[in-house]
Amino acid sequence: MVEVPGSSPGSPTKQSKTSLRHKDLHGSATRQPCVCRIENTETEYASFVAKIDVSTLGAASEGPQVVNPDLTFAELVDAFCLLAPPNEPRNYRLRKWKDCCGDRIAWSLTVGELAATLEALSQAGMASSTHNRALGDLKAIYNWAIREQRRSGVPLGVESPAAGIRKLPEVTRRVHVPAQKIQELLTLAKVSTYLRMYGLVLAALASGARKNELR
Image (cartoon, rainbow, N blue to C red; front, side, top):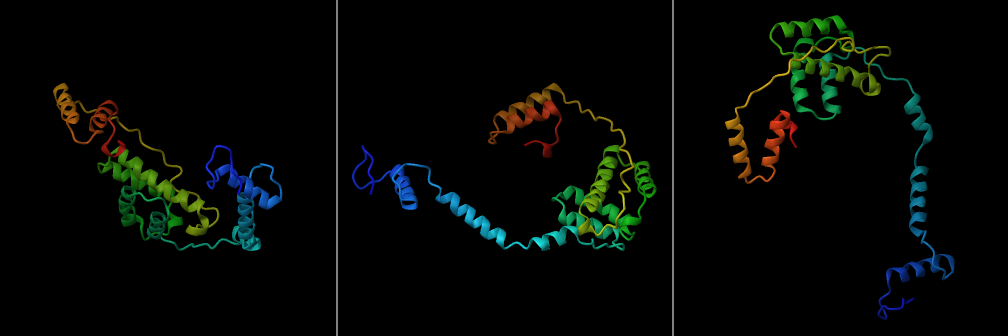
């Protein structure tokens, strides 16, 4: 065992272990960085790569795409909600689209049909912000389908029918809170057992952020 000056006998330091390990590997007592961990990593990596069939990977990336020309819009929505990042409010909003267009072939819907449906909903009282969220949902579905061709089965050449529809201008909603109410909120926030309450109330008052937007 190699001892370092200043250490008690029989208690090797980290440096002594490194020197001894290097001596075992190379037959030299010179102090150099130990490469055993790097060698082990390279060995494991080479072993992992040896198990991969490169020809199979090439076939998976270059092989023919399986097209699903009869996929309904409802089935496309279900696949999108299952495979896309979770978003419960979006999934709930998409229910109305499944009700009105669910039986249609997903790739047969046109820009005119979607635009007319959105316009009818707006005339029925749907707010511009709700219109824009619905439009964003439709664009997300078709963009996902085109990007994930092997999952959606979109026929080649299909373009998003929502791409040509523009958002509606949204009117900024302003809410006036009396000064006395603001003071009451701040006073209650200061004595709250939740330590971040005062900061959250200040942020909400200054920015107008919604509850789910505050962190």
